[in-house]
Image: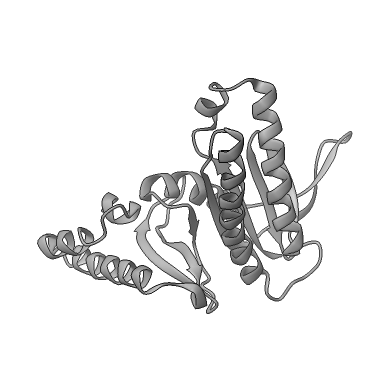
Length: 228
């Protein structure tokens, strides 16, 4: 079945967990999980599992959703918004702040019960899921982004084409995008950043290095522009 799947993970969680008492860290992560789980459930998603401090979920199963891509992309943006709200609370409480990376991908997958004779888990499997995981980890780390996707794009949101890449373990290159914002909420300053990056990427692909550099340097403190 075609599904949209997401992975999220906390950046540098091992280092953060060593800075405070383990009981306090677990309590903080449980609070974070509760907020993020609520985002997934309110969007109609299925929370698949927690793995350490990572979260996996998917849409369009077991209940079919014609707008599952839109739901997943909206949820990813809401997670980042909810995290900022947690930051405001944690700052007052003197707790460490965290950054999360999210990967979202849409495609065919096997959906059902997997496991042993004694223990089964309702989940999804296939290359679509592997790609989402690599978008979360490898792509976000490489390009300095927080939400990385690999299509399809939705008119309700604004995206930035990042690059054409060969993800770890893949044999074919894929075009990756940053899920940037709700289209109706994007600012003029953000539009300028995206336009500069698009112009830089076009020059880069034409091997016009000087022009590409000039365009990317118009975006100071922008992760993907700094990487390029």
